[in-house]
Image (cartoon, rainbow, N blue to C red):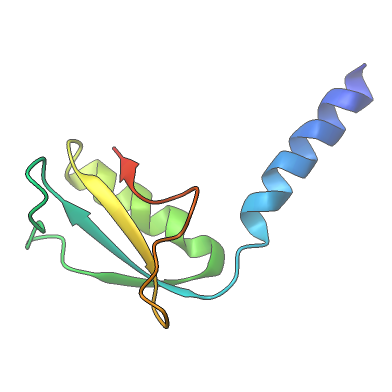
Length: 83
């Protein structure tokens, strides 16, 4: 049982680490307007989580949008993220 729990946790975390590509991370207020003081962060791969968490720590009521820098498409499963 202990090993099954460890394997499940390892596989779940592994999905976050394998993210690749370049993304833009922005934040919006409740009305959908960009929050100017946060600007736009460009993050590569798994570093989107650091960028997202930083924005949420500064603006706890924000909605974070993560887009592929090349295509402009939102990252499914991660965006939008409500802080």
